[in-house]
Length: 187
Image 1 (cartoon, rainbow, N blue to C red):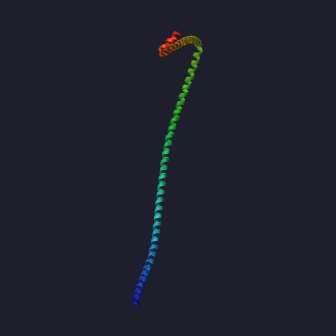
Image 2: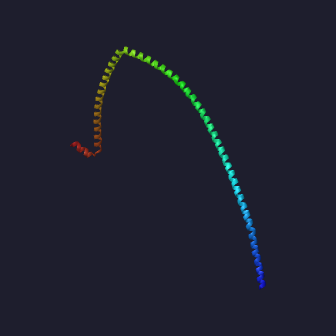
Image 3: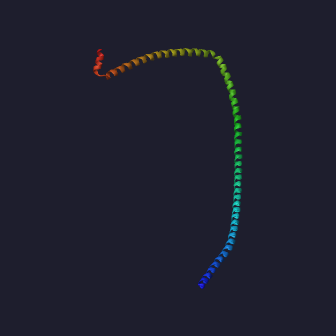
């Protein structure tokens, strides 16, 4: 018994020693490797962040450069457009000066023709007055004819209405039975 208990005790010690050994071996090495791994991970993340920041800065610089280039191109096109519009404005101004001169010429011609017409009108007033009297007499004649036509038209309308009434009465009577028509005829 004592042997059995001793042997079992020795075996138990070995197991405890084995467990302690694994703890000692795993504990310091896992801590060292874990700490080193954490430091390497921190260093990698910092390096990655720095690279990302550099890439972002480079991207921002390229973006700024492209925006500056676009702004420069836009300003050049605007300058060209302004120059083009200025040339068109100059052409329009020259054309307006030419048109103004032609308008002044037309106005002077108009004044001359107006004066000529006034002179002709002043010399021909008698003819105009005679023409007006003649037109007035024609208008009165036409007005008389229109009145006569209106009277004739009203007579014709009266005759037409009378004819329509006769026709309507005939149609109404023809649609009634024969004995009612005979009764109306007799009485």
